[in-house]
Image (tube, rainbow, N blue to C red; front, side, top):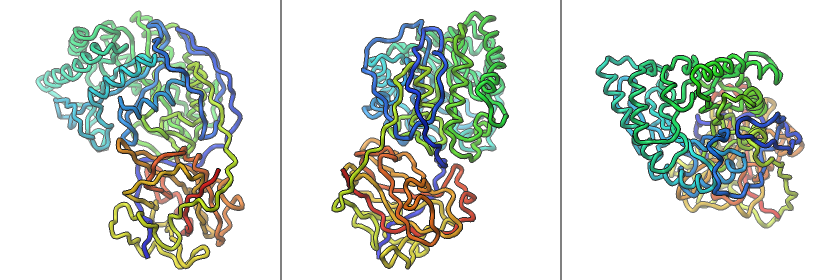
Length: 574
């Protein structure tokens, strides 16, 4: 008998329970050129929501306008920057938000903290971000301008080992010769992108990002800024690190057009159930420092990068810098952080703008079980739209599908359907520990030992199946008395240009389960609308059933009994 289930430990996603949807406030404020719009209420929205796209316009916001920016972050799970796929993401998520600037971030690398060279490679760096070519940047810049969005170019010079080795030094220990070599390499790196910015009429250039271990070398940085100014004639800033408030230690702000600082950790407070006023007050120390810096230097301030994860305790600093600590999804936490950010910074004449981190190039990013920075399909999306003056987000009612009994695609009953296999094992043979002689109206089912494995994968390589004719995925599940606390499902799909994941759904949601709750020792049908994954007509080649959080931990279901799964199929409807 051929079986179709494999297992893989995933270490790139954290999934948890979703919040209960609530009514959405449909009002939206209008942004002014010098301030953030008025107060908006953060409200929960369903993970499947739509916006009415704004019509493309070639009219750019005036240079005097308040910068309402969003970073477009190239994801290895989505289409590349500058392709038709990423343009679709911009149309779907950025244009309706009310943003008037988009930040692009090409990244180059040093090997480690002892390396004095910066190399821009087309190769993906393990643990880092995917490379972006000059051609992709140019294409994206031209497209953004063509639809009325101004562009921030913010090149990053990162260090490989800092991203993959916790023990790696976080500061450079160079002698003067080493520093001279590093600054020479940095100047070559940054003036290359400055020339690209000049040639393609980029609207704001960031001369450096979070280089806090060397920005005390004032004269070297003045030389870098002068070299950039020789080739790029638009406005220039530097993006200081929020940690330890690097901006206050920089002495070369007079050589730049704006004071720039990233805003991570600003507004954090260690208080249980803080009110909005508590959150706004937590911003006041940073606001006072930035206002005083603006007065002393005669420059406006740009928050060059700020964002929030949608995880419980984010505002209390549970992410601990670069080290994520497992926590449950909490979309309201992210929304509340954004609301406090906008409220605390509104109507500040010394503030030029805010650039949010981030929207990725993934089509189905965000959603109610994603703890990451993307605010798409989460309560914070409505907050951003309201403060940026974008299109209000209206909940999409779930359609009342009528099942077509003859239209289904059975992936597993007793045998593996032809064309499907273990994605990493050509033999098509599942380990015996996944086989159970206890099926739903059949001899066999699949055993998912939660105490040992974190994920089951059903997969095919070729041909790729299209999901457009189906409305649900359904299967039967049987649990023991010690029930699973975390259990999720997700699709993965491919195209010739990229691969990506669907949104993640919580199998434990009572709306999906026959009877509304687990009945130990009884086979129960689970039926999940495909629209809840965000998918409607995509190709797909993998389905995941997971017990996994980031970092992956067996503690989630360590006390749960093993579960049985049977009769997995896609069901059509109308």
